[in-house]
Image (cartoon, rainbow, N blue to C red; front, side, top):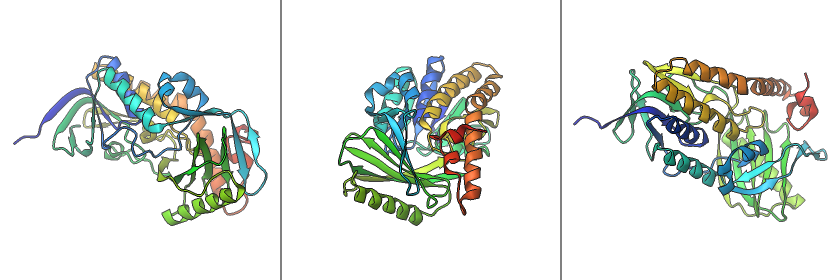
Length: 353
């Protein structure tokens, strides 16, 4: 018995923010879109610190149904020195599961077919995608939005080579806060710790470029004990999560499998900031661009892939280049004394030179 074959104009792999926005944009452009995600439900499990910048909040009406509270400023603590407050880093704490669900609902409302619990098992030389349910997906263009370890990216030789590993717990807050707290220390090479308040609880986490799972857990335990002694958090652990963040800059962002063009978006394209780890805004923006370009490719615009790549480098190249340079400076100094103010976005020194 032959496998069921689904034909479409645009296939989207992954239905996080990048994939959902790509599916919506492609469908709005008139393409027949099939989007898949290996998870059973949008946004779950949550693997995100859930802080988005003010600019993204203003640009997306979908945030209206997913916000938890505002963030008014950032407080940065270097080693054990007093914290430095920065008012220019406002944003919103979001409910990431609700954010993803709303993005998927918008894609479906635009005409995209979204399938959950379906994963890419193999990619044929001709561009067909074999799925784990035994069916085959055949598309004129593909958007790879399946995260930092993208199956589709790997299939076409475009993988993220450098990753930041993260571990995060949810903890109760003992007092309300609208300040995101950042902790820089040599114990977290290439990364940092964070406490992001979200109503009555907070996301407490750590990330680093070179560490094993045990080492990361020890660093998170140490930060948790430090904050327990200081008083802003309670002792209960309400949840545990973690994941990987790309930290090597732009991957691709275009390729081919057979004659089928592939556009990488979001974390699959390496668009997360390698210093801060922030990636939601880049996922949304690149997803919209990728969906529009994929629809154009499917309708016969052969230049759409190159145009997409140019837009990605124009939009994200300069900021990622700076972040990569700062991350490399810090990596080289990790065994001695990093120039902390030059390595973190809240300080003027980061933006100089």
